[in-house]
Length: 248
Image (cartoon, rainbow, N blue to C red; front, side, top):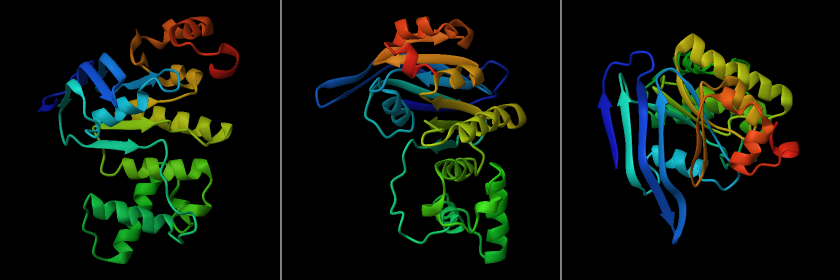
């Protein structure tokens, strides 16, 4: 069950509350009695081994997955959720530019922008949120992994969401691009007050940027401060990760 309630958002107030969330698909339990909270203005990291149910949890929050339990939003304004998926399948041979791609997204919102000049300026402003306005005339299929992630993030930020969901935001991005994303995510919180729930496999990056961490492996195995997970051995014992290869 999903509920939405508008209210003021004082510091440390909850934006999202999940209670006893369970998901069963084809007789297999994907999530079992998950309980967690995301606070206004926080970066909340969601971590765990492959197949732990992280993406299923994100999809449940977005309303795209049948589930038992309660997902409750305590929005204070628009109630909009921005989303950057882990993967976005498309035909790289289709000659669509970044301008065309964002235009399509705007029509889905919808935003009615009648004149091409006005639309172009609007799209440049949207891309400017992630410092990628210079890509406006580039073909989507010719972008690097990091460039495409910036475009997706820019699209998710317009119009401004109350909750931003990032599913592996630095996937298919080199180390330099990942560091840039890390800085960008922190800026979104510090400069704009965005509330962010982020799934990631780079554990050390997640611990650097997060205000709070929840680990799941079908159910919640840890929920607390990132400082409690600085020891790689603690991470390994909690999540069954290989310290030498997975904790980075």
